[in-house]
Length: 229
Image (cartoon, rainbow, N blue to C red; front, side, top):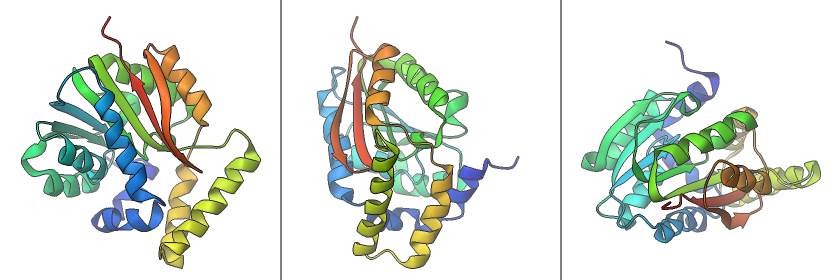
């Protein structure tokens, strides 16, 4: 079965995808660090079962694993090639790696946390809202959803500024012309949404609260808690 175009584009870069992150994600340490730290506000107790959506090479899961030693992971991604990299990275901490489209269904819960990094923005807005409802459904009571994401600005002008700032920051980090060109080609699959819209969707599908705990131009960490009732 052929891969969707977005998955195929990322599969082509699977072996060196993780190394590229530090040149193509400005503020890498603060961005991923905020996402992992946000899990400390979960009400479900120590994390034991975590689902990573659009998991790619397992980078986000690895950051969570380093802070939560009891956590074991299920990964979902459209690229088998990316998940092979994740298997090598996570080792025995990996319970299962599912090749599939997160918009078409999630592994059965309950999960103590659901995380995602730089993946959900590939979905159209309606599919994002449906996915947020599905995430709420597979979380255990008190569970946390953390989405470290690329976002749009509230206006087209600000979105353009986000994009310009991203490129200039990547060049300052040492990204080559070829790396930026390839990243821009992958960005044609982006369907980013503003922070305020996404926080509203999260609360509409039943999360007790939703917040943006980190933002740096077009990168944001969105957090939502599923209540215990």
